[in-house]
Length: 204
Ligand code: GRF
Image (cartoon, helix red, strand yellow):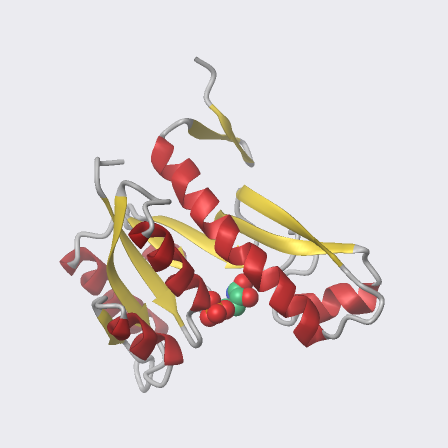
């Protein structure tokens, strides 16, 4: 990637992962990237206002009344307008088509489970119901298949006997904020490659 990478972040609601990435950049924990733009498919997303309060370019691109293809076309045009190279999905509640994914962006997603366990919605509740002792989060490369692309970073979180979906989600979320920064730095370092499904360090 270039010396300074432009990140585009897609959100649908609260946007705490987006804010964590912004804070990491401000604090110098992600030294060679900037957030070029934040887009939300939901005009009421709290994250949009929070992003603007941080001085970020943040806009709604709602899906209302347009096809998925048309919506993705608007997103791609917006990301190109801000010269985005790396797209971070951060609580973005839509699966992107291969048409979107074929535009040359590297697209990362974060999911609140240790994939491949518990893909889809309510991953934390799925983990509690299954009775696992360790839950966590995963940052992976987004593919057309939901929560299934090559894994970049995982962070474990112990499941406690009295956990509810809310308490477990809160603890996992704190690890998500760390995981996203780690994953972005790994990607930007250029030191890793994808071999089959595995994201691993290049041999020197
Ligand atoms: C996070 O738990 C993320 O893993 C999931 O949706 C939640 C979004 O939270 N995909 P936020 O909007 O980043 O606060």
